[in-house]
Image (cartoon, rainbow, N blue to C red; front, side):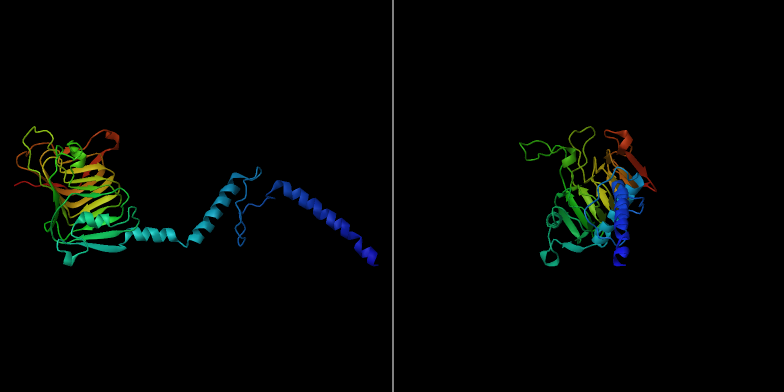
Length: 298
């Protein structure tokens, strides 16, 4: 009896071997659900010849899901860190009331590559300094105590010597305040170039108060004061809301894609001069839109 019971076993083993051989070469055996739920993620499986494109896309999607689960939504934490202030620095001319006495010192204190939103609060006062925000110091909010109370100013022009063998700065480097990093926000502060209004036809007298050379910048409740070439809207996408812009010739110019809701004040010496020189090189990439703008006249 025992021998008779054992006879079917070789047949069953042989049948199983046939099934395994029949399935193994195909690699997928008709399975269309990618990685099975609950299966431990191992090494990435090779894209077999018989697998369909849909199966490969599904496999990659499942790998992405596992990856995102492993991050525990850190991507969203990073987004929040950049949208909401992580910490605040205070600038005051009196060192007893602030962390720094100059705006540039506060900017330089940030990491060379800044990845969180930082508020630099500038208390009331006139800060005579030339400020430059380097390209990787993104996510800075500059907040003044009011456009009439907090002023940052300098007086360079295009023909000012640069210190490099006496070569002129040029318009680009004449800016009192230069923004080269993305996601910059300024509120309730004045940017000023103190250079006097040039005579008609004078050369090398371009004097930029603010230059913006980075994407995603916004200015709310700010003033831009100068004469020729006051606001250099150089490149990127920018938004100006409830701002006041003053100048003589070409006092808003550049190659940026910007939206303005501002008050414009052409200086009386040049009441009919051109206000805009918005095209520099590529007309297809330049757009300057004025919305609800008023021209201030006295």
